[in-house]
Image: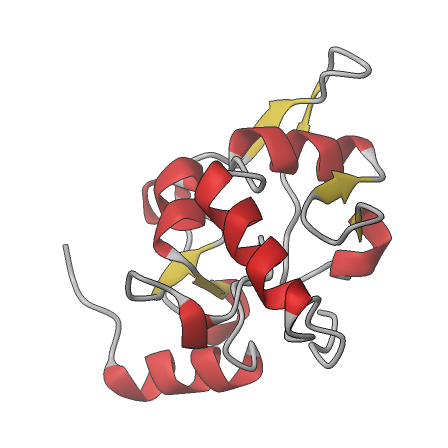
Amino acid sequence: MSRTPESIRRIVAVRARGYCEYCRCSEQFATESFTVEHVKPRHAGGETIIENLAWSCFGCNGYKHAKTKAIDLETGKKVPLYNPRQENWSDHFDWSDDFTQVVGKTPSGRATVEALRLNRTGVVNLRRLLSSVNLHPPEDVKDG
């Protein structure tokens, strides 16, 4: 497995403004390193080019792995996962009233919440803590 060149890693990280492009957790408060994630997996022909890379926390990257589709529990249909290179986060997701949960607004959003487990216990607890000191949600994170 080849490692993503450091120059590309820096571009991907800066573009994401230090936030996971899936769960929107801040790298600043993460307990694990963030990584470059292939939106279209390499085994499916995805290239290691900036247009196919997302900045991802360890949890989201691990749960996504090589997935590109998942089941939307509301419709029961298999749908594409959210693609941070082609779509805006706010078109597919919103925050719960207390800002601790990511809520899927579309079939792709709902499927991504479930498949990547965007509301993992540790992440929800971190959001709760950060919200209490006005460091969450990340309003300044630019979509797409």
